[in-house]
Image 1 (tube, rainbow, N blue to C red):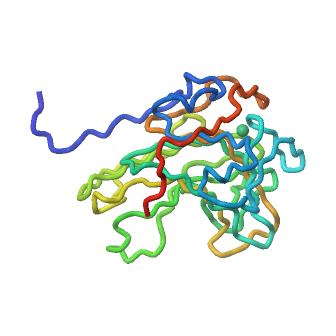
Image 2 (image 1 turned 180 degrees about the horizontal axis):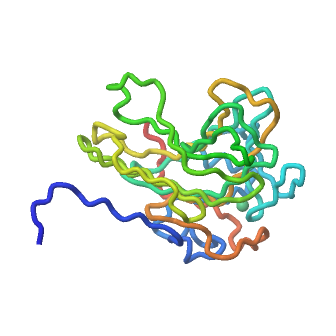
Image 3 (image 1 turned 45 degrees about the vertical axis):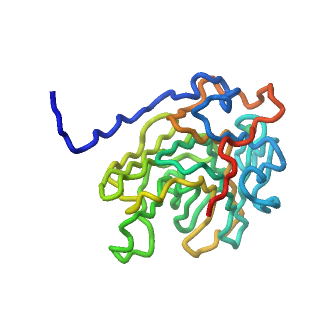
Length: 276
Ligand SMILES: [Ca+2]
Protein backbone atom coordinates (compact mmCIF):
# COMPACT_ATOMS: atom_id res chain seq x y z
CA UNK A 1 0.00 0.00 0.00
CA UNK A 2 1.25 3.44 -0.87
CA UNK A 3 0.65 6.18 1.63
CA UNK A 4 1.66 9.78 1.73
CA UNK A 5 1.55 10.20 -1.99
CA UNK A 6 1.31 13.93 -2.53
CA UNK A 7 -0.03 14.06 -6.05
CA UNK A 8 -3.70 13.44 -6.74
CA UNK A 9 -4.25 10.82 -9.42
CA UNK A 10 -5.77 12.21 -12.57
CA UNK A 11 -9.26 10.76 -12.97
CA UNK A 12 -9.64 8.53 -16.00
CA UNK A 13 -11.15 10.02 -19.08
CA UNK A 14 -14.66 8.83 -19.90
CA UNK A 15 -15.71 8.24 -23.47
CA UNK A 16 -18.53 6.78 -25.49
CA UNK A 17 -21.91 6.84 -23.84
CA UNK A 18 -22.45 8.97 -20.77
CA UNK A 19 -25.44 10.05 -18.76
CA UNK A 20 -27.38 10.81 -21.95
CA UNK A 21 -27.56 7.08 -22.58
CA UNK A 22 -30.38 6.87 -20.07
CA UNK A 23 -32.50 9.37 -21.98
CA UNK A 24 -33.14 8.35 -25.59
CA UNK A 25 -33.38 11.40 -27.79
CA UNK A 26 -32.48 13.41 -24.67
CA UNK A 27 -36.09 13.28 -23.55
CA UNK A 28 -36.22 13.80 -19.80
CA UNK A 29 -32.51 14.47 -19.50
CA UNK A 30 -33.23 17.72 -17.68
CA UNK A 31 -34.61 15.71 -14.76
CA UNK A 32 -31.26 14.06 -14.13
CA UNK A 33 -29.77 15.52 -10.96
CA UNK A 34 -26.40 15.73 -12.67
CA UNK A 35 -27.82 18.02 -15.35
CA UNK A 36 -27.57 21.71 -14.49
CA UNK A 37 -29.06 23.09 -17.66
CA UNK A 38 -30.55 21.90 -20.93
CA UNK A 39 -31.61 23.74 -24.04
CA UNK A 40 -33.32 22.33 -27.10
CA UNK A 41 -33.66 25.66 -28.90
CA UNK A 42 -37.34 25.07 -29.63
CA UNK A 43 -38.56 28.46 -28.43
CA UNK A 44 -38.36 31.75 -30.30
CA UNK A 45 -37.48 33.30 -26.94
CA UNK A 46 -34.50 30.97 -26.40
CA UNK A 47 -32.28 33.94 -25.55
CA UNK A 48 -34.10 34.60 -22.28
CA UNK A 49 -32.33 31.56 -20.85
CA UNK A 50 -29.04 33.02 -22.01
CA UNK A 51 -29.10 36.32 -20.17
CA UNK A 52 -29.99 38.35 -23.23
CA UNK A 53 -33.01 40.66 -23.04
CA UNK A 54 -33.77 40.99 -26.72
CA UNK A 55 -33.37 38.52 -29.52
CA UNK A 56 -29.85 38.54 -30.90
CA UNK A 57 -30.21 39.53 -34.57
CA UNK A 58 -27.89 36.73 -35.65
CA UNK A 59 -29.43 33.96 -33.57
CA UNK A 60 -32.57 32.50 -35.17
CA UNK A 61 -34.66 29.47 -34.38
CA UNK A 62 -35.03 27.44 -37.57
CA UNK A 63 -36.98 24.31 -38.36
CA UNK A 64 -37.18 23.78 -42.10
CA UNK A 65 -34.37 22.09 -44.00
CA UNK A 66 -32.22 24.46 -46.03
CA UNK A 67 -30.67 22.58 -48.95
CA UNK A 68 -28.67 25.62 -50.04
CA UNK A 69 -26.78 25.53 -46.75
CA UNK A 70 -26.83 21.76 -46.42
CA UNK A 71 -28.99 22.06 -43.33
CA UNK A 72 -31.31 19.39 -42.01
CA UNK A 73 -32.75 19.64 -38.50
CA UNK A 74 -31.21 17.68 -35.67
CA UNK A 75 -34.18 17.46 -33.35
CA UNK A 76 -37.08 19.69 -34.29
CA UNK A 77 -35.92 23.30 -34.17
CA UNK A 78 -32.35 24.41 -33.71
CA UNK A 79 -30.44 27.63 -33.25
CA UNK A 80 -28.94 29.05 -36.42
CA UNK A 81 -26.08 31.46 -35.83
CA UNK A 82 -25.32 33.81 -38.70
CA UNK A 83 -22.16 35.76 -39.29
CA UNK A 84 -23.24 38.27 -41.93
CA UNK A 85 -20.92 38.88 -44.86
CA UNK A 86 -18.62 41.82 -44.19
CA UNK A 87 -18.78 41.42 -40.42
CA UNK A 88 -17.05 39.47 -37.66
CA UNK A 89 -19.88 39.09 -35.18
CA UNK A 90 -22.20 36.15 -34.68
CA UNK A 91 -23.77 36.02 -31.25
CA UNK A 92 -22.76 36.34 -27.63
CA UNK A 93 -24.95 34.79 -24.96
CA UNK A 94 -24.21 33.51 -21.48
CA UNK A 95 -25.62 30.73 -19.42
CA UNK A 96 -24.60 31.11 -15.80
CA UNK A 97 -23.91 28.24 -13.49
CA UNK A 98 -23.26 28.16 -9.80
CA UNK A 99 -19.59 28.51 -9.17
CA UNK A 100 -18.11 25.15 -10.05
CA UNK A 101 -14.69 23.53 -9.90
CA UNK A 102 -15.43 21.32 -12.89
CA UNK A 103 -18.09 21.17 -15.55
CA UNK A 104 -19.13 19.34 -18.68
CA UNK A 105 -21.03 20.84 -21.56
CA UNK A 106 -22.16 19.16 -24.71
CA UNK A 107 -23.96 20.38 -27.80
CA UNK A 108 -24.72 19.25 -31.31
CA UNK A 109 -23.00 21.39 -33.89
CA UNK A 110 -23.35 21.65 -37.64
CA UNK A 111 -21.45 23.98 -39.89
CA UNK A 112 -23.44 25.18 -42.87
CA UNK A 113 -22.35 24.05 -46.30
CA UNK A 114 -21.21 27.53 -47.15
CA UNK A 115 -19.25 27.97 -43.92
CA UNK A 116 -15.81 29.38 -44.45
CA UNK A 117 -13.41 31.31 -42.34
CA UNK A 118 -10.69 33.71 -43.37
CA UNK A 119 -9.04 33.79 -39.97
CA UNK A 120 -9.30 31.70 -36.91
CA UNK A 121 -12.07 32.42 -34.47
CA UNK A 122 -13.81 30.79 -31.62
CA UNK A 123 -17.13 29.82 -30.16
CA UNK A 124 -18.21 28.69 -26.69
CA UNK A 125 -14.49 28.59 -25.89
CA UNK A 126 -14.23 26.19 -28.76
CA UNK A 127 -12.39 27.38 -31.82
CA UNK A 128 -12.60 27.02 -35.56
CA UNK A 129 -9.91 27.54 -38.14
CA UNK A 130 -9.73 28.03 -41.90
CA UNK A 131 -10.91 25.07 -43.92
CA UNK A 132 -8.45 22.28 -44.51
CA UNK A 133 -7.67 20.96 -47.99
CA UNK A 134 -10.66 18.61 -47.79
CA UNK A 135 -13.05 21.44 -47.00
CA UNK A 136 -13.43 20.47 -43.35
CA UNK A 137 -13.51 22.87 -40.43
CA UNK A 138 -10.78 22.33 -37.82
CA UNK A 139 -12.11 22.88 -34.31
CA UNK A 140 -10.37 23.14 -30.99
CA UNK A 141 -10.04 25.26 -27.89
CA UNK A 142 -8.81 28.77 -27.31
CA UNK A 143 -7.76 29.02 -23.73
CA UNK A 144 -6.71 31.83 -21.47
CA UNK A 145 -4.72 30.66 -18.49
CA UNK A 146 -3.53 31.95 -15.17
CA UNK A 147 0.10 32.34 -16.22
CA UNK A 148 -0.47 34.77 -19.06
CA UNK A 149 0.47 37.73 -16.89
CA UNK A 150 3.77 36.08 -16.06
CA UNK A 151 4.38 35.44 -19.74
CA UNK A 152 3.19 38.94 -20.63
CA UNK A 153 0.87 37.26 -23.07
CA UNK A 154 -2.06 39.15 -24.56
CA UNK A 155 -3.71 36.27 -26.34
CA UNK A 156 -4.76 32.83 -25.24
CA UNK A 157 -3.32 29.59 -26.54
CA UNK A 158 -4.83 27.64 -29.39
CA UNK A 159 -5.22 23.87 -29.16
CA UNK A 160 -6.62 21.99 -32.14
CA UNK A 161 -8.85 18.95 -31.79
CA UNK A 162 -9.83 17.66 -35.23
CA UNK A 163 -11.48 18.76 -38.46
CA UNK A 164 -15.25 18.53 -38.92
CA UNK A 165 -17.06 18.18 -42.22
CA UNK A 166 -19.59 20.82 -43.12
CA UNK A 167 -23.28 19.97 -43.53
CA UNK A 168 -23.11 17.28 -40.85
CA UNK A 169 -24.15 17.15 -37.21
CA UNK A 170 -21.50 16.39 -34.61
CA UNK A 171 -21.76 15.87 -30.88
CA UNK A 172 -19.16 18.14 -29.27
CA UNK A 173 -18.41 17.95 -25.55
CA UNK A 174 -16.05 19.95 -23.36
CA UNK A 175 -14.81 19.30 -19.84
CA UNK A 176 -13.02 21.79 -17.68
CA UNK A 177 -11.61 21.07 -14.25
CA UNK A 178 -9.90 23.95 -12.54
CA UNK A 179 -6.45 23.40 -11.13
CA UNK A 180 -5.63 23.49 -7.47
CA UNK A 181 -4.05 26.90 -6.90
CA UNK A 182 -0.31 26.46 -6.89
CA UNK A 183 -0.51 23.20 -8.81
CA UNK A 184 -0.32 22.45 -12.48
CA UNK A 185 -3.27 20.06 -12.60
CA UNK A 186 -6.09 21.80 -14.47
CA UNK A 187 -7.78 19.57 -17.02
CA UNK A 188 -9.39 20.31 -20.37
CA UNK A 189 -10.87 17.51 -22.42
CA UNK A 190 -12.78 17.50 -25.68
CA UNK A 191 -14.86 14.83 -27.36
CA UNK A 192 -16.40 14.60 -30.80
CA UNK A 193 -19.17 12.02 -31.15
CA UNK A 194 -18.09 10.44 -27.87
CA UNK A 195 -14.46 10.02 -28.91
CA UNK A 196 -11.85 11.81 -26.83
CA UNK A 197 -9.99 14.06 -29.24
CA UNK A 198 -8.25 16.45 -26.86
CA UNK A 199 -6.83 16.07 -23.39
CA UNK A 200 -4.43 18.23 -21.44
CA UNK A 201 -4.05 17.72 -17.73
CA UNK A 202 -1.49 20.30 -16.63
CA UNK A 203 -3.26 23.60 -17.07
CA UNK A 204 -2.90 26.48 -14.65
CA UNK A 205 -6.27 28.15 -15.15
CA UNK A 206 -6.08 30.09 -11.91
CA UNK A 207 -3.74 31.15 -9.15
CA UNK A 208 -6.37 31.85 -6.49
CA UNK A 209 -9.11 29.59 -5.18
CA UNK A 210 -11.79 32.25 -5.49
CA UNK A 211 -11.93 31.83 -9.25
CA UNK A 212 -14.41 29.24 -10.44
CA UNK A 213 -16.36 28.26 -13.53
CA UNK A 214 -19.20 30.78 -13.62
CA UNK A 215 -20.80 30.50 -17.03
CA UNK A 216 -20.90 28.83 -20.40
CA UNK A 217 -20.38 31.50 -23.01
CA UNK A 218 -21.91 30.80 -26.38
CA UNK A 219 -19.93 33.20 -28.44
CA UNK A 220 -19.56 32.90 -32.20
CA UNK A 221 -17.10 35.31 -33.67
CA UNK A 222 -15.12 35.46 -36.90
CA UNK A 223 -11.61 36.76 -36.54
CA UNK A 224 -9.05 38.10 -35.48
CA UNK A 225 -10.20 41.21 -37.17
CA UNK A 226 -10.90 40.06 -40.71
CA UNK A 227 -14.60 40.08 -41.65
CA UNK A 228 -15.99 37.04 -43.39
CA UNK A 229 -16.49 37.66 -47.11
CA UNK A 230 -19.92 36.04 -47.29
CA UNK A 231 -22.76 35.22 -44.95
CA UNK A 232 -22.13 31.98 -43.10
CA UNK A 233 -24.13 29.88 -40.66
CA UNK A 234 -23.64 27.29 -38.00
CA UNK A 235 -26.35 25.40 -36.15
CA UNK A 236 -26.60 24.31 -32.52
CA UNK A 237 -29.04 21.99 -30.77
CA UNK A 238 -29.42 19.90 -27.60
CA UNK A 239 -27.02 21.73 -25.34
CA UNK A 240 -26.49 20.13 -21.93
CA UNK A 241 -24.48 21.45 -18.99
CA UNK A 242 -23.78 18.84 -16.34
CA UNK A 243 -21.60 17.71 -13.49
CA UNK A 244 -20.84 14.36 -15.17
CA UNK A 245 -19.81 13.22 -18.61
CA UNK A 246 -22.84 13.51 -20.89
CA UNK A 247 -21.92 11.75 -24.09
CA UNK A 248 -23.86 11.53 -27.33
CA UNK A 249 -27.56 10.99 -27.62
CA UNK A 250 -28.28 7.32 -27.13
CA UNK A 251 -30.93 6.64 -29.77
CA UNK A 252 -30.66 6.86 -33.49
CA UNK A 253 -31.39 10.48 -34.07
CA UNK A 254 -34.78 11.36 -35.38
CA UNK A 255 -35.10 14.85 -36.70
CA UNK A 256 -38.72 15.04 -35.61
CA UNK A 257 -39.27 13.97 -32.04
CA UNK A 258 -42.57 14.33 -30.23
CA UNK A 259 -42.04 16.77 -27.45
CA UNK A 260 -43.53 15.07 -24.44
CA UNK A 261 -43.03 18.22 -22.43
CA UNK A 262 -44.12 21.57 -23.66
CA UNK A 263 -41.12 23.19 -22.04
CA UNK A 264 -37.84 21.44 -22.52
CA UNK A 265 -35.92 24.27 -20.97
CA UNK A 266 -36.70 24.07 -17.27
CA UNK A 267 -35.74 26.76 -14.85
CA UNK A 268 -32.08 26.29 -14.21
CA UNK A 269 -31.07 24.93 -10.87
CA UNK A 270 -28.73 27.78 -10.22
CA UNK A 271 -30.91 30.78 -9.51
CA UNK A 272 -30.08 33.49 -8.73
CA UNK A 273 -27.67 33.30 -11.60
CA UNK A 274 -25.60 36.43 -11.68
CA UNK A 275 -22.85 37.22 -9.26
CA UNK A 276 -20.41 39.58 -10.85
CA1 LIG B 1 -34.13 21.29 -30.95
